[in-house]
Image 1 (cartoon, rainbow, N blue to C red):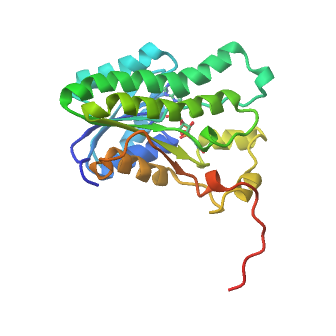
Image 2 (tube, helix red, strand yellow):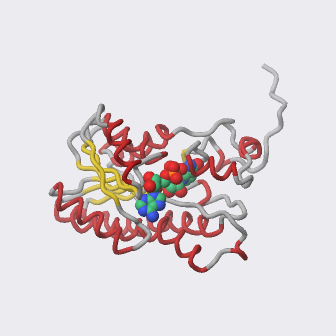
Image 3 (cartoon, protein in one colour):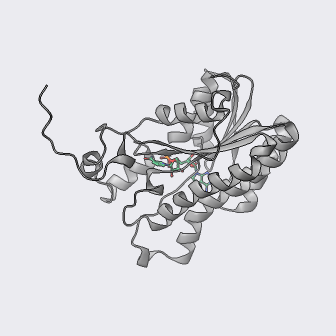
Length: 261
Ligand SMILES: NC(=O)c1ccc[n+]([C@@H]2O[C@H](COP(=O)([O-])OP(=O)(O)OC[C@H]3O[C@@H](n4cnc5c(N)ncnc54)[C@H](O)[C@@H]3O)[C@@H](O)[C@H]2O)c1
């Protein structure tokens, strides 16, 4: 992809799952990558693994506080001297009925999944504007457009992420800063494994409305992210690209019968 080699990339939530897949794709493009996560052991392990591909390090932070999201970007720029690409991936799910959410739980989901994206993005923008441009990609979700119960705070946060991407794209395009989103369908990460264990995520019912009949891989999400961040997408801003095996387009479970050849 054009425009990624040698670029300084910050990936929040890059220590595992989708963010790790995103970090790996940037490394294969020759970018210099920093991943951010909560747990040092996990971050260290991922850096050790991925440093076979390219230059990568980590920062530890709890992005559940807006000030921290700003500080993470400030620390990155203080260490690297610039920021070319920011990918907001960090996210959590709390699965319970809307009537059971405590105010703290509701706020926590919005803080990590939405507010950290906003505050990290505008801090990155400050530097990207001075540098003459940059690119930001936010990880949304299929749940920004199709909703399942017992995930209200998450669904609300992800729907707002699409709005954040659109509105900041309008504000920042004139400064050469693009911002786009990628909305994954189901990806077999720790987040989804926990949901299956809790008995809240049912893989069969997901597959019944997923035309490709499979989950996505972190690499497939990473492919979309590197495209949107690269110069190949130089005319694209404010968009959310659904990488979900067709789930977003599928109204009802499809019949098992197939057309005759
Ligand atoms: N897995 C899926 O099917 C799926 C589908 C759609 C969207 N997503 C989104 O993709 C993103 C990554 O999800 P995943 O499945 O890889 O999850 P995961 O639980 O495997 O990884 C989450 C990452 O976010 C980081 N993180 C979480 N809370 C944080 C905090 N307070 N401060 C700093 N870092 C924090 C973790 O350290 C980790 O690196 C999330 O935004 C999620 O909502 C996932």
